[in-house]
Every structure is written in structure tokens, then in C-alpha cells.
Image (tube, rainbow, N blue to C red; front, side, top):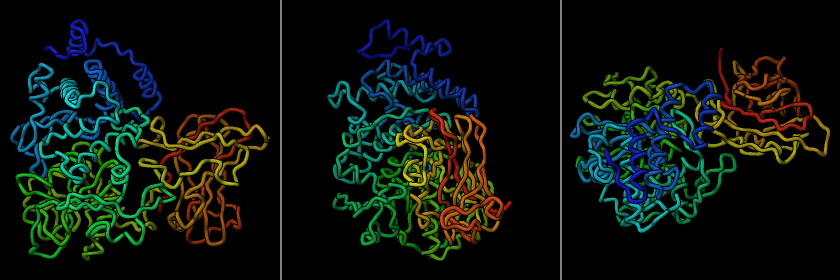
Length: 622
């Protein structure tokens, strides 16, 4: 096969073609790959297959950047992540349609193949690369290279020669593949910008999980979006007027705990017609209900968030859903008023509310903690508003096919309703977790206090923020990292440095919610335990926790750590021998407590010590 591109010589082109045909003989000289190999050797939790696929994909991306050097580094990886989470999609039949009758996308890059009003990106990209459309559909490597050829073609159309990542908004809009997505007003611009925002967001954070590695980059957000659009994209609630084509943002304040934008009380009810925490983008496809609302249908979009918003606004089948939830951060968009009938589940439309979750059923990576939390909160809203029994949420094993469940189960998947042929949300949806989030109530069930997947949560201060901390310098820091973690994609990295002006031993109070007990969930003492995973990259470290109860703050006994290994540490709230008085406390825990802080202790040392914590949690029962 021949790959056509004017910026490389024929000798270089022949060498790249040889590498494509002989992947086992490639020589990867990029230092990033060498570093990545070391990371894989260190992280025992990574499987051999995942590491192999990851290296292979990175190799393909590297070849694409060599062929098309005008494409900014990281752009291809981010597009593959947002469209497919790096999973190659091969439609078995071009005429076969995906969930909600939307056209299936092709390959790891998520190209369209000319169905309905979408552009035939597969054929165009194949011609630009000099290969057949079948090769673009069937080969991960060719799919990446052909997409790169199409992106380079669009870059040329914009008149840019060597754009920065932040300059790729227009190209990203073109790559959505729909000729109707022409940004004729603010609503269209918002949908296109949502795709670009999601891509830059993963590059800004970086990613290292589920066989995907993306190196974090310093994104200049104000170069990519106007101040107004950036505020809209980050806001938890947006008002979009489809008829007028306008977008406005309610008054917002910054939440001091999780550093996200929150609505002010006076603006809260005006954010969207039904659910205060949602965007509002109207779909034209809805009708009058002929039955009262009595159930909730859980869906998976089989596509991207921005693509779903676009599809529900303009499609030949008049399909829609009430809400769509973004994978990366749990952003919620409402598209049909709740009192209206959306077109999402056939014969059950009149009696159900439908939630679409961004992603594909065959890849668990889409179902993030942020998505589960946002969806559970939305379902709780349904239960309260329409007297639906949330305890009837399905809590059994996930299914890969159509399995009709009893009508007494009111919250369940598309695949669980009668008269259906769709299999979403599929085998990877965690129904037990979903049921617990909806019904746990924060007292009798296990609670994940912070897992650092989307943010630092309540642990958003430095190790030196507390006046109770001694012995370490202000150069010490805490930040999320994807390089060393116990589970998921991130952990919290705490680096402790000695204060040379004192000989005091280290005693570090790493606060939850800045030490404000009212901003931490109340935990039951009876049968409860507080614990977390911790790794000390150095010897001599001890850890403890402190909790607030009704008479002050109590601190646990210290636990010594072995160096360079993950250890789960835990304290029983019912065991009085594990607790001591500290600030205004008496060493006796009352019936309810809240986490105050995690403590680190060490004898003074001039060495820098790196600590990592993950999955800070409350566990109930045995």
C-alpha cells in the first residue's frame, strides 16, 4: 500500500510503509515509550495484554505524526479516547444501525461511513491515504493513519500550517462528520465545542488506565475558547434557547470543597425546566404521554456525548431521550421535558424516563465514578418527583443480551424491558453499585469518601494548610497523579519535604474538607470502619486518621508502613482501644462521626518522601 503525503520524501514514505507491514520490526526511539515501559514494569496491576495493546497503539499514533507532522501532538490520542476509549469498532453490516437507530462509527478513531446525513469519512480518508475503505474499517493501524490523513486535509482547509492544540476547534468541528453541524448559532457552537472540550480535558489531566496512556499537557484554555464559552462548558447548568439560538449561564459561585462551579440559590430553579443540575438542549422529538411516569430506563449511547446531542436534535427516526450524561465528568444535559414522552424505548415510552450514558456497552472504561454519581442523583430526583420506588432498582448481575425483568423492577436497563432488541447498558454496567448509590443514604452502606478519579474531592489543600502540621516545609505538596495508583486511573500524591529551620519530627494533618466537619458525610459508629490504601516510597512512615464527633476531634492509633508497597490501613469505629483524645476530645466516639484528616508521621529526615493514598472509604458491617 502507498501512503500519500507531500511533506515527507519517498524514502521516508517507503520506510513508514515497511513499518506498517512489519510491526514487530519497528524500532521505537521515542523516550516517552521507554519511560512508559518502565511504568508498566513498576505497576503490577497492569495486565500484559493491556500493556502490549497500549504500546502498539502508541506506535501507530507515532507513525501517524511522522506522516502528518502538522497535527499537534496528543490530538489523535485524545480524539480516539473521546470517540471510542481506544477500542476499535468494526460494524458487522454497514446497514446495521446502532442504539437509538444512530449510525455505527468505524475503527478506533470513530469515523462515519456516510449513513443518513453524516459524511462518508471512511471513503474520503481511505482515498487520502491510498488504501481501501475495507482496510480503514478492519485495521486499527490503518484507521489511525487514514484519520490522520483526513485531519491533515482539514487543517489545510483552515489555512493553518502548524496549529497548536488550542487552534484545532474548527478541525474538530469538521471531524464530527455531520454537514448540519455548522455552528450557525450558539447552540450549534456549544455542541461542537463540547467535543473539543472533552478532548482537551483528557489531555489536560492525562490518562493511564484500561489500556490507554495519554501524557498530560499544559492546555491553554483561554486560547482554545472564549471566556464566555469556557464558562458554559465548565458550568454545571446552562440554559440553551433552541428557537433563538442563544446560550446563557446562571449566576455561579465556586464550591470551596471540590472547586467546581455551583449555581447560586436564587438561580437554581431557572437552570433547566426540570432538573437543576442539567444543561438544557431541546430535542424536537417528543409527544404526549398516555400513561403516568412509573419507571426509569438506563441506556448507553453507543457513541460520544457531543455526537448524541447532535443526533437527538436531528435524525431521520425521531429518536430522543430525556437526559444524556457525559462520561468524563458526569455533566448532565436534558433534551426532553419530563412530562413529555421521549422516543427511547418503544412501547414503554409513555410510562418511562430515559437516561442515556455516553459510551459503548463493550468497554467498561466509559462507566466512570462521575457518571455513576451523576446518574444516581438524577434517578433519585425521578423517585422523589414521581413517587417511583428507588428500592426497586435492579441490583443483580449485568447481562450481555436482552433479559426481560419483572415490571415490579422500576429502574432497569433498556435490555430489561419487554419488546426490546437493544442490549444496553450491557455486561459492564454495575447494577449493585448503582442500586447502592441510589439507596445507600450514606449511613448503612459502604461509602467511597474520595477516590481521586475526577478531582481531589475534599482533599484539596496542601499538607501544610493545617496549623497542626509540624516539621515539613511549605515546599511540600499534594496533587492527583495517574502514574502511581492502587485502583482506577488516579491516586493522590503527597510529597513531604523537611523544614530545615526546625529539628521537629514530622507530623502532618492532611485535611478533608479543609477541616470543616459539616462538609464531610456523617458516618455511623456502629459496625463502621474508616480506611484507605497507602504507599510510602520511603521507610519509617506511620499513618493515622482523626474524626470529628459531638465533643471534638479524636485521633486513631498509628500504623507503621512497609516501604514501597501498597497497604490497606483501617480503624474500627466501634473499638475504643484504637482511639485517643486529641482536640477537645475525650477518646470516646459518639454514635456519628465524620472524617477530619489523614495523618502522616516520621522522625525528622532531610530526604524527600513521596506518599500515595487511594480509595479513602467507610465500610459498614463485617
